[in-house]
Figure (tube, rainbow, N blue to C red):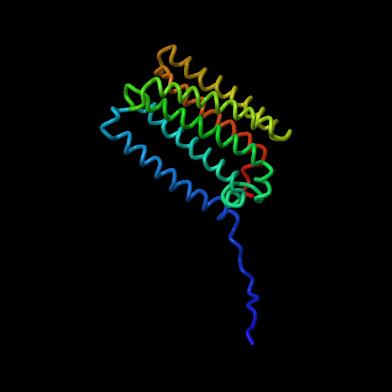
Length: 220
């Protein structure tokens, strides 16, 4: 007669499942993407992009990878619940439309910024194509973000509005101070690409501030 093993099995800690593993996977994917980009940047095709373009490339990769991760997680709730910070797959199913549109918007913004960072004459992307991808990604992503906002519940709409208000304050503070110091010759004036990249970064910063204040960064 075989005895049933009643030894309790310890479940994987939530911080390992929702923080450590996703962080490790994200780090590997991000490192691979960054390495591939840097090899491309260091190739003979590209002539010294400069610090502004390189920083824009890193921000663009973050947006693109984050957008793809969110979109993939929303499209496949069972898999997405394993690496996105949600209670379970049902929560992803409820927010599927919002997350897919949001993920697509982030990916488009990232692709648009990447094309601008690699634009000619220092990059391999023709200026017309870079402008079309940059402006098109910004506009289409903006439309998708509006669609996602309208599909949100009241709580998430308030969070969006709060993030927008904080973004406005950060833009006035950071861009305003930078412009003032540049005007009196204390620092170099921001290049156009610097301003575009800065807008992307400040939107992210404002979003993290809002979700942190609302307790949404707590591992679930």
